[in-house]
Length: 241
Image: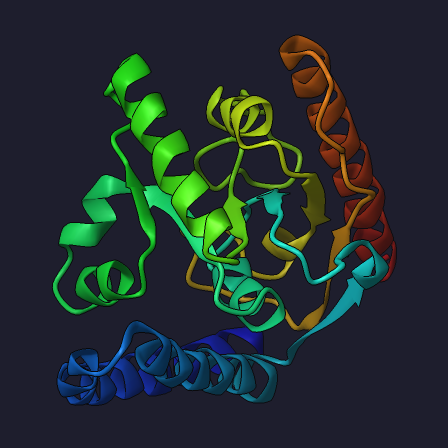
């Protein structure tokens, strides 16, 4: 049954993307905020397809930790699922993405028009400096930042080092960082066609206010995210046993 659901979803989703992407090109001529509203509709339509065709629903915890003020969301990254859903929770956010993504036809062009932040992961200190400057501009304009501290999708149970970008933003942008855990990889595994129905949990944890020393912050951030991630992964796995 899961294989059938996954096949139907792939057919519908990629057909939908192929049809809609060219239609979105002229919409880029409007204001950035107008184009963001158009893309928000796209994200919501994709989430509806995920829920309807794949049977993947979700539960959001810790919304009380989001005050509406600009913050840095430091989120676990396990699948494409969270890149869609976070857009509908943190409205008009700015993602930190690999610079190469901005070069992709349609998708990359849309990210650029939305003001997402591309980072050259091989650029060293100069790339970090540029990242901080770009994020400060977005925060000053009232937009929250979403960054994946490990820099890439990490499957449940796997380990991946936390990169220095989030700590650099924390120490220099002077806004709270909200650690965020999730277990989407259990239902939407990385680089796997087959998807699994169920309920994804995404949990916003208590904000880390400015003022911690950089190394202390990095250890605290990793401990918070990893501990919560392991907990909600176990919760999901127990439902299948």
